Every structure is written in structure tokens, then in C-alpha cells.
Image (cartoon, rainbow, N blue to C red; front, side, top):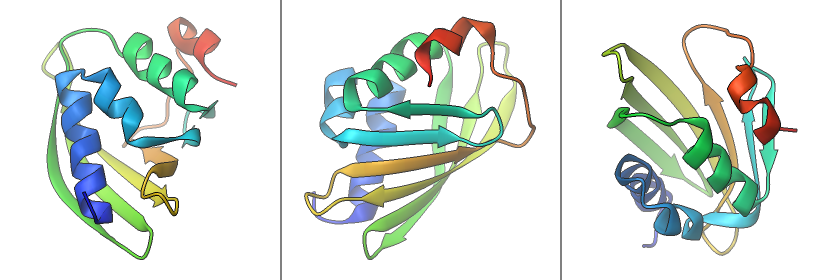
Amino acid sequence: MSGEIDVVTAYWAAAEERDWDTFAALVAEDVVYEAPQSRERVQGRSAYVRFNREGFPGPWHLQVVKIVGGNGSAASWISMTDADGTVQPGLSFFELDRANLIARIADFWPDSYELPASRSHLVE
């Protein structure tokens, strides 16, 4: 993989497949994830993989609508379908480090919501 778009494409493919080893290999050891609407912040590769693996159980699916990127940054628009069939768009902004690993992620979802109690132990 060489470009930002390729890295983010692989990231979303690994998430959809629940391939947590590949997912982990795409993020930096000191990755920082933030979801401003719910005030969630997760730092570090192992914590971030755990956040995704445990924090979002169930048969959800995602489809990439569009990814753009260049100069060490990328942005994606995805469509997420929850277990109950609810579809939500999501916007994610990525910063990559010199090793072409994802170093920062900021996620935005259409509606603000409170931090679910089921994930409170997974975030800072």
C-alpha cells in the first residue's frame, strides 16, 4: 500500500471483516481516536482495537461511499447499517504518520448522543 486512500480503504475493509489483526497493523502504536459528539477518546493501538472489537458488537455492516486523500491525510464517508437495519452516514478524518500508518482519527455521526454505559470502560 502506498497512498492514504489505499490505507483507509484497507482499514474499512478490515473493520467490515472484523479482521482485527489487519486492522491493528494499519494504525500507529500511539494512534489517537476521537468522537467529538460523544466525547470519546481512545489512545494506543491495543486500546483502539479493543474499543472497536468490544464496543461495537453485533451484525453491523459498513459500505464505503467515498474516500479522498493526499499529503498525509484522508477523509471517508461510509454508510453504516446497524443490526436493526438502521442506516447512518459517518464521516471520518484520518492523519497518517511517516510510516503511512493511521495516527489520528476523528469520527462524526449525524446525531449527537451520550456515551453509552456499555463502552464507558473503553474510553478515556
